Image (cartoon, rainbow, N blue to C red):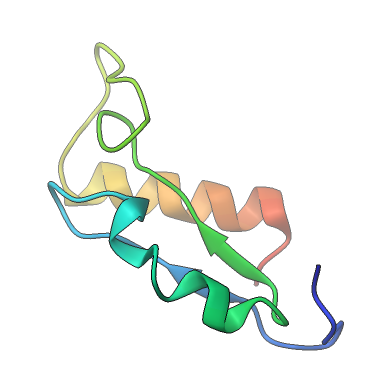
Length: 73
């Protein structure tokens, strides 16, 4: 629950070959802010999807899609 409704969202993006598990110790430090952490397809707890681009452009497109869906500008 975010206690700072006008706070700028904090986004945790893991690197290639990693997962949101990388942020397990930091997430609780930001519990009063809107935070977003997610696994890219095929990493962490996310299933790998056939015919999906797993290069930097694909990761960027999916990250921006998450931002759009969450209303992050």
